[in-house]
Length: 369
Length: 126
Image (cartoon, rainbow over all chains, first blue to last red; front, side, top):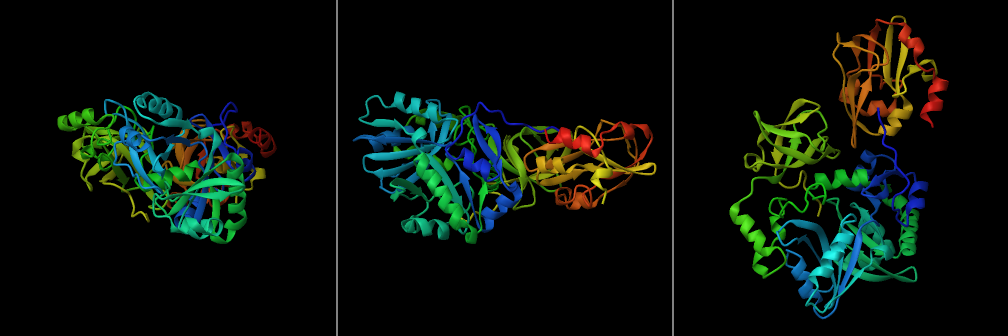
Protein backbone atom coordinates (compact mmCIF):
# COMPACT_ATOMS: atom_id res chain seq x y z
CA UNK A 1 0.00 0.00 0.00
CA UNK A 2 1.11 3.53 -0.65
CA UNK A 3 0.26 6.42 1.61
CA UNK A 4 0.32 10.03 0.57
CA UNK A 5 2.23 12.21 3.02
CA UNK A 6 1.54 15.90 3.31
CA UNK A 7 4.30 18.40 2.64
CA UNK A 8 4.97 21.48 4.69
CA UNK A 9 5.12 24.39 2.20
CA UNK A 10 1.36 24.82 2.22
CA UNK A 11 -1.02 27.55 3.34
CA UNK A 12 -2.63 27.05 6.73
CA UNK A 13 -5.84 28.42 8.22
CA UNK A 14 -5.91 30.15 11.63
CA UNK A 15 -7.17 26.85 13.06
CA UNK A 16 -4.25 24.71 11.89
CA UNK A 17 -2.72 23.98 15.32
CA UNK A 18 -6.15 23.52 16.87
CA UNK A 19 -7.14 21.03 14.17
CA UNK A 20 -3.94 19.04 14.58
CA UNK A 21 -4.50 18.91 18.35
CA UNK A 22 -8.07 17.72 17.69
CA UNK A 23 -6.64 14.75 15.78
CA UNK A 24 -6.95 16.10 12.25
CA UNK A 25 -5.04 14.16 9.60
CA UNK A 26 -3.65 16.95 7.42
CA UNK A 27 -3.35 16.72 3.63
CA UNK A 28 -2.64 19.04 0.71
CA UNK A 29 -5.92 20.43 -0.63
CA UNK A 30 -5.32 22.84 -3.52
CA UNK A 31 -2.29 24.31 -1.74
CA UNK A 32 -3.91 24.36 1.69
CA UNK A 33 -2.92 22.03 4.50
CA UNK A 34 -6.34 20.85 5.67
CA UNK A 35 -7.72 17.92 7.66
CA UNK A 36 -9.07 15.09 5.51
CA UNK A 37 -10.51 13.46 8.63
CA UNK A 38 -10.52 13.35 12.43
CA UNK A 39 -12.25 10.25 13.85
CA UNK A 40 -12.97 8.79 10.41
CA UNK A 41 -14.91 9.74 7.30
CA UNK A 42 -17.80 7.34 7.93
CA UNK A 43 -18.30 8.43 11.55
CA UNK A 44 -18.09 12.13 10.62
CA UNK A 45 -20.49 11.68 7.71
CA UNK A 46 -22.96 9.90 9.97
CA UNK A 47 -22.66 12.58 12.67
CA UNK A 48 -23.65 15.29 10.19
CA UNK A 49 -26.63 13.26 8.94
CA UNK A 50 -27.91 12.44 12.45
CA UNK A 51 -26.46 15.04 14.88
CA UNK A 52 -23.96 17.70 13.82
CA UNK A 53 -20.41 18.33 12.71
CA UNK A 54 -18.09 21.32 12.42
CA UNK A 55 -15.84 21.95 9.41
CA UNK A 56 -13.04 24.49 9.10
CA UNK A 57 -13.76 26.24 5.80
CA UNK A 58 -11.42 29.17 6.46
CA UNK A 59 -9.68 28.50 3.16
CA UNK A 60 -12.73 29.84 1.32
CA UNK A 61 -12.60 33.42 0.06
CA UNK A 62 -14.57 36.55 0.95
CA UNK A 63 -14.95 39.56 -1.33
CA UNK A 64 -16.88 42.65 -0.23
CA UNK A 65 -18.54 44.67 -2.96
CA UNK A 66 -19.79 48.10 -1.94
CA UNK A 67 -20.89 51.36 -3.46
CA UNK A 68 -23.87 52.90 -5.25
CA UNK A 69 -23.59 50.40 -8.16
CA UNK A 70 -22.96 47.35 -5.95
CA UNK A 71 -26.19 45.49 -6.81
CA UNK A 72 -25.96 46.31 -10.51
CA UNK A 73 -22.37 44.98 -10.48
CA UNK A 74 -23.35 41.79 -8.64
CA UNK A 75 -26.05 41.17 -11.26
CA UNK A 76 -23.48 41.82 -13.98
CA UNK A 77 -20.95 39.18 -12.82
CA UNK A 78 -23.46 36.48 -11.81
CA UNK A 79 -25.83 34.52 -14.06
CA UNK A 80 -28.64 34.15 -11.47
CA UNK A 81 -31.11 36.83 -10.40
CA UNK A 82 -29.32 38.17 -7.32
CA UNK A 83 -31.12 39.20 -4.16
CA UNK A 84 -31.05 42.93 -3.38
CA UNK A 85 -32.85 42.34 -0.11
CA UNK A 86 -30.54 42.90 2.91
CA UNK A 87 -30.03 39.64 4.78
CA UNK A 88 -30.47 37.33 1.79
CA UNK A 89 -27.92 35.48 -0.33
CA UNK A 90 -28.12 33.90 -3.79
CA UNK A 91 -26.17 30.97 -5.23
CA UNK A 92 -24.93 31.62 -8.77
CA UNK A 93 -22.18 30.95 -11.25
CA UNK A 94 -19.65 33.58 -12.24
CA UNK A 95 -19.16 33.28 -15.99
CA UNK A 96 -16.47 34.19 -18.48
CA UNK A 97 -17.43 36.08 -21.65
CA UNK A 98 -17.69 32.73 -23.47
CA UNK A 99 -20.19 31.38 -20.91
CA UNK A 100 -17.64 29.10 -19.21
CA UNK A 101 -17.88 28.79 -15.41
CA UNK A 102 -15.17 30.79 -13.58
CA UNK A 103 -16.54 29.88 -10.16
CA UNK A 104 -19.68 29.11 -8.20
CA UNK A 105 -20.37 31.37 -5.23
CA UNK A 106 -23.01 32.66 -2.85
CA UNK A 107 -23.35 36.44 -2.84
CA UNK A 108 -25.12 37.94 0.16
CA UNK A 109 -26.83 41.31 0.24
CA UNK A 110 -25.74 42.92 3.54
CA UNK A 111 -27.19 46.39 2.81
CA UNK A 112 -28.53 48.05 -0.34
CA UNK A 113 -24.99 49.16 -1.23
CA UNK A 114 -22.96 46.37 0.40
CA UNK A 115 -22.58 42.74 -0.69
CA UNK A 116 -20.42 39.80 0.40
CA UNK A 117 -19.38 37.13 -2.09
CA UNK A 118 -18.19 33.83 -0.56
CA UNK A 119 -16.06 32.14 -3.20
CA UNK A 120 -14.00 28.97 -3.53
CA UNK A 121 -10.49 28.82 -2.06
CA UNK A 122 -8.56 27.95 -5.22
CA UNK A 123 -10.38 30.57 -7.29
CA UNK A 124 -10.51 33.50 -4.84
CA UNK A 125 -7.59 35.44 -6.35
CA UNK A 126 -8.79 34.75 -9.90
CA UNK A 127 -12.33 35.88 -9.00
CA UNK A 128 -11.07 39.08 -7.42
CA UNK A 129 -8.96 39.94 -10.47
CA UNK A 130 -11.97 39.18 -12.68
CA UNK A 131 -14.23 41.42 -10.58
CA UNK A 132 -11.67 44.24 -10.85
CA UNK A 133 -11.57 43.91 -14.63
CA UNK A 134 -15.35 43.88 -14.87
CA UNK A 135 -15.81 46.84 -12.53
CA UNK A 136 -14.85 49.51 -15.09
CA UNK A 137 -17.77 51.90 -15.36
CA UNK A 138 -19.32 50.77 -12.06
CA UNK A 139 -19.18 52.91 -8.94
CA UNK A 140 -18.08 50.07 -6.67
CA UNK A 141 -15.31 49.32 -4.24
CA UNK A 142 -13.92 45.77 -4.15
CA UNK A 143 -12.28 44.39 -1.01
CA UNK A 144 -10.51 41.01 -1.13
CA UNK A 145 -10.98 40.15 2.54
CA UNK A 146 -10.10 36.43 2.43
CA UNK A 147 -7.02 36.80 4.64
CA UNK A 148 -8.97 38.73 7.29
CA UNK A 149 -11.65 36.07 7.72
CA UNK A 150 -11.80 32.53 8.96
CA UNK A 151 -14.98 30.50 8.52
CA UNK A 152 -16.58 27.48 10.19
CA UNK A 153 -19.49 25.40 8.93
CA UNK A 154 -21.74 23.79 11.57
CA UNK A 155 -23.96 21.28 9.82
CA UNK A 156 -26.58 18.71 10.75
CA UNK A 157 -30.03 18.41 12.32
CA UNK A 158 -28.69 19.51 15.72
CA UNK A 159 -26.83 22.53 14.32
CA UNK A 160 -29.70 25.00 15.01
CA UNK A 161 -29.89 24.01 18.68
CA UNK A 162 -26.13 24.36 19.13
CA UNK A 163 -25.61 27.55 17.11
CA UNK A 164 -28.79 28.98 18.67
CA UNK A 165 -27.18 28.72 22.13
CA UNK A 166 -24.36 30.98 20.93
CA UNK A 167 -26.24 33.18 18.43
CA UNK A 168 -29.97 33.12 19.33
CA UNK A 169 -30.68 35.46 16.40
CA UNK A 170 -29.37 32.82 13.98
CA UNK A 171 -32.49 30.71 14.53
CA UNK A 172 -34.63 33.32 12.75
CA UNK A 173 -32.52 33.09 9.59
CA UNK A 174 -34.14 31.55 6.51
CA UNK A 175 -32.10 29.31 4.19
CA UNK A 176 -29.45 31.53 2.51
CA UNK A 177 -30.09 34.23 5.13
CA UNK A 178 -27.22 36.22 6.67
CA UNK A 179 -26.92 38.42 9.75
CA UNK A 180 -23.96 40.30 11.22
CA UNK A 181 -23.79 39.77 14.99
CA UNK A 182 -21.46 40.91 17.78
CA UNK A 183 -18.84 38.25 18.49
CA UNK A 184 -15.70 38.18 20.63
CA UNK A 185 -15.35 41.96 20.73
CA UNK A 186 -15.87 42.22 16.96
CA UNK A 187 -18.63 40.97 14.68
CA UNK A 188 -19.26 37.74 12.81
CA UNK A 189 -21.35 36.98 9.73
CA UNK A 190 -23.75 34.12 10.46
CA UNK A 191 -25.19 32.49 7.34
CA UNK A 192 -27.75 29.71 7.05
CA UNK A 193 -25.91 27.89 4.32
CA UNK A 194 -23.90 24.74 3.85
CA UNK A 195 -22.66 22.04 1.54
CA UNK A 196 -23.96 18.88 3.17
CA UNK A 197 -27.67 18.60 2.32
CA UNK A 198 -28.46 19.21 6.00
CA UNK A 199 -29.61 22.31 7.85
CA UNK A 200 -26.76 24.34 9.27
CA UNK A 201 -24.78 27.54 9.43
CA UNK A 202 -21.55 29.01 8.20
CA UNK A 203 -19.93 31.66 10.36
CA UNK A 204 -17.23 34.02 9.06
CA UNK A 205 -15.21 35.98 11.61
CA UNK A 206 -11.69 37.31 12.16
CA UNK A 207 -9.00 34.64 12.70
CA UNK A 208 -9.18 35.21 16.47
CA UNK A 209 -12.98 35.24 16.38
CA UNK A 210 -13.00 31.99 14.40
CA UNK A 211 -10.74 30.32 16.97
CA UNK A 212 -13.00 31.57 19.77
CA UNK A 213 -16.06 30.21 17.95
CA UNK A 214 -14.40 26.80 17.49
CA UNK A 215 -13.61 26.65 21.23
CA UNK A 216 -17.16 27.54 22.23
CA UNK A 217 -18.62 25.03 19.76
CA UNK A 218 -16.42 22.22 21.05
CA UNK A 219 -17.14 23.15 24.68
CA UNK A 220 -20.92 23.19 24.16
CA UNK A 221 -21.20 20.69 21.32
CA UNK A 222 -20.89 17.42 23.24
CA UNK A 223 -24.54 17.08 24.18
CA UNK A 224 -25.56 17.94 20.61
CA UNK A 225 -23.36 15.16 19.23
CA UNK A 226 -20.94 17.61 17.58
CA UNK A 227 -17.78 16.13 16.05
CA UNK A 228 -14.95 17.85 14.15
CA UNK A 229 -15.19 16.90 10.48
CA UNK A 230 -12.68 16.93 7.64
CA UNK A 231 -12.71 17.36 3.89
CA UNK A 232 -13.32 13.64 3.37
CA UNK A 233 -16.80 13.69 4.85
CA UNK A 234 -17.42 17.13 3.36
CA UNK A 235 -16.94 15.51 -0.04
CA UNK A 236 -19.13 12.43 0.58
CA UNK A 237 -21.87 14.62 2.07
CA UNK A 238 -21.91 17.09 -0.82
CA UNK A 239 -21.72 14.45 -3.55
CA UNK A 240 -24.64 12.46 -2.09
CA UNK A 241 -26.59 15.72 -1.93
CA UNK A 242 -25.96 16.58 -5.57
CA UNK A 243 -23.75 19.65 -5.02
CA UNK A 244 -21.14 20.71 -7.52
CA UNK A 245 -17.44 20.80 -6.60
CA UNK A 246 -15.80 23.55 -8.65
CA UNK A 247 -12.52 22.43 -10.18
CA UNK A 248 -13.64 18.79 -10.23
CA UNK A 249 -17.21 18.88 -11.62
CA UNK A 250 -17.10 22.22 -13.40
CA UNK A 251 -14.47 24.51 -14.88
CA UNK A 252 -14.04 27.23 -17.47
CA UNK A 253 -14.71 24.80 -20.33
CA UNK A 254 -18.27 24.06 -19.13
CA UNK A 255 -21.42 26.16 -19.07
CA UNK A 256 -23.97 25.99 -16.22
CA UNK A 257 -26.29 24.05 -18.56
CA UNK A 258 -23.74 21.29 -19.04
CA UNK A 259 -23.01 21.31 -15.30
CA UNK A 260 -26.69 20.44 -14.77
CA UNK A 261 -27.21 23.84 -13.15
CA UNK A 262 -29.44 25.45 -15.78
CA UNK A 263 -31.64 26.63 -12.91
CA UNK A 264 -29.02 29.21 -11.88
CA UNK A 265 -29.18 30.89 -15.32
CA UNK A 266 -31.78 33.64 -15.62
CA UNK A 267 -31.52 34.76 -19.24
CA UNK A 268 -34.61 36.95 -18.81
CA UNK A 269 -33.05 39.06 -16.04
CA UNK A 270 -31.19 41.21 -18.58
CA UNK A 271 -27.56 41.38 -19.62
CA UNK A 272 -24.77 39.75 -17.63
CA UNK A 273 -21.25 38.61 -18.46
CA UNK A 274 -21.45 35.48 -20.60
CA UNK A 275 -25.14 35.79 -21.46
CA UNK A 276 -24.72 36.19 -25.20
CA UNK A 277 -22.40 33.18 -25.45
CA UNK A 278 -24.72 31.09 -23.26
CA UNK A 279 -27.68 31.76 -25.58
CA UNK A 280 -25.57 30.78 -28.59
CA UNK A 281 -24.15 27.65 -27.00
CA UNK A 282 -27.57 26.59 -25.71
CA UNK A 283 -29.06 26.90 -29.20
CA UNK A 284 -26.21 24.84 -30.67
CA UNK A 285 -26.95 22.13 -28.09
CA UNK A 286 -24.63 20.21 -25.80
CA UNK A 287 -22.91 16.88 -26.30
CA UNK A 288 -22.34 16.13 -22.62
CA UNK A 289 -24.08 16.91 -19.36
CA UNK A 290 -23.08 16.27 -15.75
CA UNK A 291 -24.97 13.10 -14.90
CA UNK A 292 -25.12 11.00 -11.75
CA UNK A 293 -24.53 7.24 -11.63
CA UNK A 294 -25.11 4.80 -8.79
CA UNK A 295 -23.53 1.35 -8.63
CA UNK A 296 -26.03 -1.48 -8.29
CA UNK A 297 -23.43 -3.93 -6.95
CA UNK A 298 -20.32 -3.67 -4.82
CA UNK A 299 -17.31 -1.53 -5.59
CA UNK A 300 -16.07 2.03 -5.29
CA UNK A 301 -15.95 4.18 -8.43
CA UNK A 302 -13.28 6.90 -8.61
CA UNK A 303 -12.42 10.03 -10.55
CA UNK A 304 -11.53 9.03 -14.11
CA UNK A 305 -13.57 5.82 -14.31
CA UNK A 306 -15.14 5.33 -17.76
CA UNK A 307 -18.92 4.93 -18.11
CA UNK A 308 -20.17 2.58 -20.79
CA UNK A 309 -23.46 1.86 -22.53
CA UNK A 310 -22.84 -1.48 -24.19
CA UNK A 311 -19.55 -1.06 -26.06
CA UNK A 312 -19.91 2.72 -26.35
CA UNK A 313 -18.08 4.97 -23.93
CA UNK A 314 -20.39 7.72 -22.67
CA UNK A 315 -17.78 9.66 -20.71
CA UNK A 316 -15.76 9.60 -17.50
CA UNK A 317 -16.53 10.31 -13.87
CA UNK A 318 -15.15 13.58 -12.47
CA UNK A 319 -16.20 12.94 -8.85
CA UNK A 320 -16.95 9.52 -7.41
CA UNK A 321 -16.88 7.86 -4.02
CA UNK A 322 -18.49 5.41 -1.68
CA UNK A 323 -21.71 7.05 -0.44
CA UNK A 324 -21.97 6.29 3.29
CA UNK A 325 -25.68 7.14 3.62
CA UNK A 326 -26.58 4.96 0.62
CA UNK A 327 -24.11 2.15 1.26
CA UNK A 328 -23.08 2.11 -2.37
CA UNK A 329 -20.73 3.72 -4.88
CA UNK A 330 -21.85 6.92 -6.64
CA UNK A 331 -20.35 9.42 -9.03
CA UNK A 332 -20.97 12.23 -11.49
CA UNK A 333 -19.47 12.71 -14.90
CA UNK A 334 -19.97 14.47 -18.20
CA UNK A 335 -21.87 11.86 -20.15
CA UNK A 336 -23.37 11.63 -23.65
CA UNK A 337 -27.12 12.34 -24.13
CA UNK A 338 -28.07 8.63 -23.97
CA UNK A 339 -27.47 8.80 -20.21
CA UNK A 340 -29.26 12.05 -19.39
CA UNK A 341 -32.50 10.41 -18.21
CA UNK A 342 -32.58 8.73 -14.80
CA UNK A 343 -32.73 4.96 -14.36
CA UNK A 344 -30.70 4.04 -17.45
CA UNK A 345 -28.62 0.91 -17.01
CA UNK A 346 -24.94 1.64 -17.69
CA UNK A 347 -21.60 0.15 -16.66
CA UNK A 348 -18.72 1.79 -14.77
CA UNK A 349 -15.22 0.52 -15.46
CA UNK A 350 -13.44 -0.04 -12.13
CA UNK A 351 -9.96 -1.62 -12.03
CA UNK A 352 -10.49 -2.86 -15.60
CA UNK A 353 -13.82 -4.56 -14.84
CA UNK A 354 -17.29 -3.30 -15.70
CA UNK A 355 -19.70 -2.87 -12.80
CA UNK A 356 -23.44 -2.41 -13.37
CA UNK A 357 -24.85 1.01 -12.47
CA UNK A 358 -27.82 3.22 -13.21
CA UNK A 359 -28.10 6.90 -13.99
CA UNK A 360 -29.54 9.27 -11.39
CA UNK A 361 -31.00 12.72 -11.96
CA UNK A 362 -30.22 15.40 -9.39
CA UNK A 363 -29.47 14.52 -5.78
CA UNK A 364 -28.72 10.92 -4.82
CA UNK A 365 -30.87 11.32 -1.70
CA UNK A 366 -33.67 13.47 -0.37
CA UNK A 367 -31.92 16.50 1.13
CA UNK A 368 -33.15 18.00 4.38
CA UNK A 369 -32.86 21.53 2.96
CA UNK B 1 -6.57 -14.07 16.45
CA UNK B 2 -3.24 -14.02 14.64
CA UNK B 3 -0.97 -12.59 17.33
CA UNK B 4 0.79 -9.66 15.67
CA UNK B 5 3.94 -10.38 17.65
CA UNK B 6 4.11 -13.79 15.94
CA UNK B 7 3.38 -12.39 12.46
CA UNK B 8 5.85 -11.59 9.69
CA UNK B 9 5.45 -8.29 7.83
CA UNK B 10 5.99 -6.76 4.41
CA UNK B 11 7.27 -3.19 4.03
CA UNK B 12 3.96 -2.58 2.26
CA UNK B 13 2.13 -3.39 5.53
CA UNK B 14 0.74 -6.88 4.88
CA UNK B 15 1.22 -9.58 7.52
CA UNK B 16 1.52 -13.37 7.31
CA UNK B 17 0.98 -15.84 10.14
CA UNK B 18 2.28 -19.35 9.54
CA UNK B 19 0.23 -22.39 10.61
CA UNK B 20 2.32 -25.27 9.28
CA UNK B 21 2.46 -24.97 5.49
CA UNK B 22 -0.53 -22.64 5.40
CA UNK B 23 -0.17 -18.90 6.10
CA UNK B 24 -3.02 -16.58 7.02
CA UNK B 25 -2.56 -13.05 5.64
CA UNK B 26 -3.99 -9.61 6.30
CA UNK B 27 -3.03 -5.95 6.75
CA UNK B 28 -1.35 -4.45 9.79
CA UNK B 29 -2.96 -2.31 12.45
CA UNK B 30 -0.83 0.61 11.25
CA UNK B 31 -2.14 0.10 7.70
CA UNK B 32 -5.79 -0.06 8.70
CA UNK B 33 -5.37 3.20 10.61
CA UNK B 34 -3.66 4.87 7.66
CA UNK B 35 -6.15 3.70 5.05
CA UNK B 36 -9.06 4.22 7.52
CA UNK B 37 -12.70 3.21 6.97
CA UNK B 38 -12.40 0.22 4.64
CA UNK B 39 -15.61 0.06 2.57
CA UNK B 40 -14.80 -2.63 0.00
CA UNK B 41 -12.42 -5.56 -0.30
CA UNK B 42 -11.86 -7.68 -3.38
CA UNK B 43 -10.22 -11.01 -2.57
CA UNK B 44 -8.65 -13.62 -4.86
CA UNK B 45 -10.60 -16.81 -5.52
CA UNK B 46 -9.83 -20.10 -3.76
CA UNK B 47 -7.39 -21.95 -6.01
CA UNK B 48 -5.74 -18.76 -7.31
CA UNK B 49 -1.93 -18.75 -7.42
CA UNK B 50 -0.32 -15.73 -5.79
CA UNK B 51 3.29 -14.59 -5.89
CA UNK B 52 5.18 -12.80 -3.15
CA UNK B 53 5.19 -9.03 -3.67
CA UNK B 54 2.58 -9.14 -6.47
CA UNK B 55 -0.86 -7.48 -6.09
CA UNK B 56 -3.60 -10.06 -5.48
CA UNK B 57 -6.39 -8.18 -3.67
CA UNK B 58 -7.82 -4.66 -3.56
CA UNK B 59 -8.73 -2.61 -0.49
CA UNK B 60 -10.90 0.46 -0.89
CA UNK B 61 -11.50 3.12 1.71
CA UNK B 62 -13.79 6.12 1.18
CA UNK B 63 -10.86 8.17 -0.12
CA UNK B 64 -8.53 5.73 -1.82
CA UNK B 65 -7.86 2.32 -3.27
CA UNK B 66 -4.83 0.26 -2.27
CA UNK B 67 -3.36 -2.94 -3.66
CA UNK B 68 -2.74 -5.86 -1.34
CA UNK B 69 0.58 -7.52 -2.10
CA UNK B 70 0.96 -11.24 -1.33
CA UNK B 71 3.40 -11.70 1.57
CA UNK B 72 4.25 -15.22 0.38
CA UNK B 73 3.85 -17.28 -2.80
CA UNK B 74 1.46 -20.18 -3.09
CA UNK B 75 -2.15 -21.20 -3.66
CA UNK B 76 -5.14 -19.56 -2.02
CA UNK B 77 -6.91 -22.26 0.04
CA UNK B 78 -9.46 -20.21 1.98
CA UNK B 79 -10.83 -16.66 1.80
CA UNK B 80 -12.51 -14.61 4.52
CA UNK B 81 -15.88 -13.75 2.96
CA UNK B 82 -16.86 -11.98 6.19
CA UNK B 83 -14.71 -8.95 5.23
CA UNK B 84 -16.38 -8.78 1.83
CA UNK B 85 -19.80 -8.56 3.52
CA UNK B 86 -18.54 -6.35 6.36
CA UNK B 87 -15.35 -4.50 5.34
CA UNK B 88 -15.31 -2.62 8.69
CA UNK B 89 -13.90 -5.84 10.22
CA UNK B 90 -10.57 -4.94 8.63
CA UNK B 91 -10.46 -1.77 10.76
CA UNK B 92 -11.94 -3.31 13.88
CA UNK B 93 -9.73 -6.40 14.01
CA UNK B 94 -6.90 -6.45 11.44
CA UNK B 95 -5.24 -9.43 13.13
CA UNK B 96 -8.50 -11.20 14.00
CA UNK B 97 -11.83 -11.28 12.14
CA UNK B 98 -10.32 -8.91 9.57
CA UNK B 99 -7.90 -11.50 8.13
CA UNK B 100 -7.90 -11.69 4.31
CA UNK B 101 -7.16 -15.22 3.10
CA UNK B 102 -4.94 -18.28 3.57
CA UNK B 103 -2.13 -19.40 1.30
CA UNK B 104 -0.62 -22.87 1.01
CA UNK B 105 2.96 -21.72 0.74
CA UNK B 106 5.03 -22.96 -2.19
CA UNK B 107 8.26 -21.30 -1.01
CA UNK B 108 8.29 -21.49 2.79
CA UNK B 109 11.72 -19.82 2.92
CA UNK B 110 10.09 -16.56 1.77
CA UNK B 111 8.42 -16.22 5.14
CA UNK B 112 11.72 -16.17 7.01
CA UNK B 113 12.90 -13.24 4.89
CA UNK B 114 10.02 -11.00 6.03
CA UNK B 115 10.30 -8.58 8.95
CA UNK B 116 9.44 -9.61 12.46
CA UNK B 117 7.06 -7.46 14.50
CA UNK B 118 9.73 -5.39 16.26
CA UNK B 119 11.52 -4.54 13.00
CA UNK B 120 8.25 -3.75 11.22
CA UNK B 121 7.15 -1.43 14.02
CA UNK B 122 10.33 0.60 13.62
CA UNK B 123 9.78 1.05 9.85
CA UNK B 124 6.03 1.68 10.07
CA UNK B 125 6.14 4.25 12.84
CA UNK B 126 8.83 6.35 11.09
